[in-house]
Structure formats: C-alpha cells, structure tokens
Image (cartoon, rainbow, N blue to C red):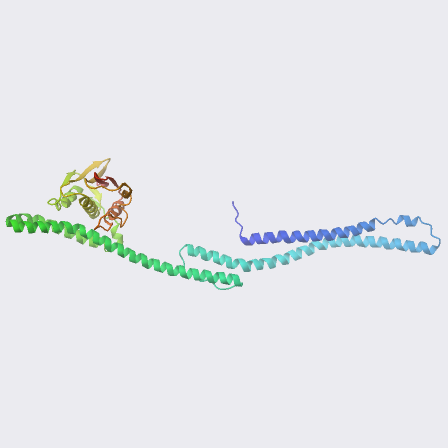
Length: 383
C-alpha cells in the first residue's frame, strides 16, 4: 500500500529531526565537558601526598584536609554528572514537546488555508464556480484568497456567457439546418408546378393526365415539409431515430419520380428488401445525397442509384459521373459549413452523417476528379 503524506507531515518531520538533532549535539557537548572535569579530578593522585614526610603535625593535618576536599569534589562531580545526564534528556523532551505543539499550531495556521484552496480548486474543476473563500489569515494568504475569489467570479461569468453563446449557436445552426432541409422538398414541388404550367400551356389534356401525379408529388413533399418542421421543433428530435419497418425501394422510386422529367436517374432496386430504419431520416439522407449528385453533374449525365443485399445488410449506393471531389476534401465534406458551392451552406452532408450515425450505420465515399463520386451506406434488414 502506497502512503501519501501531506505537507504538514513533512514540515513536522523535518522540524523534529533538526530540533532533536541540535539538542542532542548540545547535550553531548555539555556532557563531554563535564566528563573532562571529572577525568581531571580522577587524574589527581593523592597517594603521593601521604608518602611525603612533613616537618610539623600541622602540615600533615592540612595535607590530609586537602585530600579529603579533593575526594569530596570528585564524588560531587560524579553525582552531578549523573544528574545532568538524567535531567538533560528530560529537558530535551519537554522543549521538544512544547516546540512541536507550537510548530503544529503554526503549520495549521498556514496549511488550513492552503487545504481550503485545494478543495475549492477541486470544486472548480468539477464545474462549481460560485465559490467565495473567507478572507482570513496572514497578509499573503489573504491576498491569495482574494485573487482566487476574483478568479472564481470571472469563471462563473465566463461560464454564463459561454452557455448563452452556445444557446445562440445552437439556434443559429438549427435555423440554418432547417432552411437547408426545407429546400429539398421544395425542389420537387417547384418542378411539378413547372410541368403543370408547361402542359397547361401546350395541351390541356396532358395537363389533366399529369395532374394526379403532380398532386401526389406535391402532397408527399408537403407532408415531408411538415415532418421536417416537427423534427426540428426540438434539437433532440434531429438525431433520435424512430425506426420502423419499411420498403426503401418504394421510397427511392417515389423520390426519383419527382426528378425524372428533368434529370436522368437510373434505378436498380431490389424491391423485396425491407429495412429497419427511420423512414424520415432515410428520405432526408437520399434527398441530400441526390441533390449533391445533381449539383455535380450536367442534366444529360446520368445518376445511378442501386439497392441490394450484401452480407445480410441492405446497401444503398448513389453514384454520379460529375466533377468529383478533391482527395483532401473527402474527409471534410461531412463537417458542418464546409462547402465549395457558391450557393451552398455546408449542412446537407453534415446532416446526412448525423442521421446515418444516429441509426447505427456508416457512410463511405469514393471520388475521383473528373470521373465522379459514389456514396454508399447500409441499412439494417427488418425481420
């Protein structure tokens, strides 16, 4: 188990090592001096005085008295040395205890504000910006807390501004995407109305013959417009699929029928396949890809759409033979707002990728300049 010690532990440890070490050294020096004194007394040889012959009895008494004093001094010095050795350790312990208590109080005075700052920083990291630390402590720590509170207030204000900015950006993107999606159903409606006008001016009978088909096209596209508006009413509806069983070949034929009089679109569809996919998303995917293919080709150049089964999946392939896409741009065509069209806004293929990924699929693009572009994606087969 790995032990993680804090700043206070290391402060106290360093203090204890330095303090007790210093006292030990001082104590040893003192005891060594006492020992030197004791050794000096012990080195005095009183036996030589006893062998001296004094002329008077009084000299002998004085000498004996001196020897007694020396012996007493030696005994006292030994006793004092033992007492000093004992009391010195007690003195060291008491001083160390008082010093440690004072040091701990001092460390707490400095470390508690730092711990408050650490916890406040962790809260800011988690997204809680409305933090106001009490301005207490020494001058430097008070200044640090003031700076932290100012930073916290600025972060809170910045967060509020970013949230508001993100809301505005979402609505801006939503409105652009909605405008782009609305244009796709309007194209078949416009073409149907133009054909009605042309047929009416040339031959009223052909007008009446085409009228039911035009009515069906317009009704279908108006229904698509209503569905798009409903889906865009909330941003989440844009990416949450509502999968159901449907026949993608019928949807493809219905979409292409609106363009047949103006463009050459070849269909090769397996009508027996049923997909588990969001039908409205499928419609918007096809109309966006098809519109890009139309923009990339001349009216006389055909566009091929195939629907077939491969490895248990339904494969949809839309291939044009137009201008193609630059190799360095292929990885960017699904990015929002990336476009090289003069009248494009770069949202069509971005929405295509969003719808396909929301339905659990993947789209692939192959393109060569001057040869054409192929979009290919899969659908889950329905049981």
